[in-house]
Image (cartoon, rainbow, N blue to C red; front, top):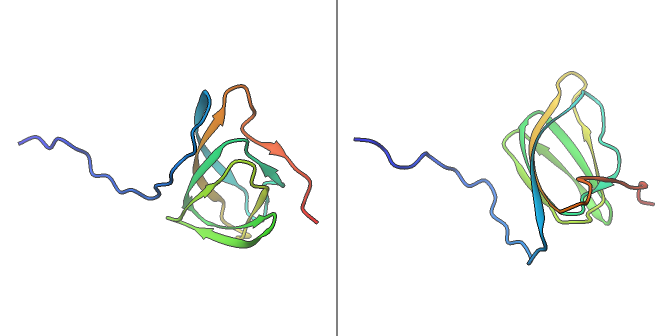
Length: 114
């Protein structure tokens, strides 16, 4: 007998506000040991899954959070953040899905919060 569906495991489900014409990106990323992303924001939704490693995310107006292998996150549009690889030897690897308004960049560099 042929199975009709692949096994699926929902890692994160989040409602999205009504949106104009959007572009979706699926991005594989890697951050070197001890490196950081630099402060930035996304003009759309950012859903990320940590494939391996551990990183600390700093947020403007929110306490920092640590994410490690198997964890997922959703950054709302405009959330200013920076992430740093917590390891001195292993890369931080992740997959992100961005849903960005057409004609806007995926990320916008920002000044560190005061």
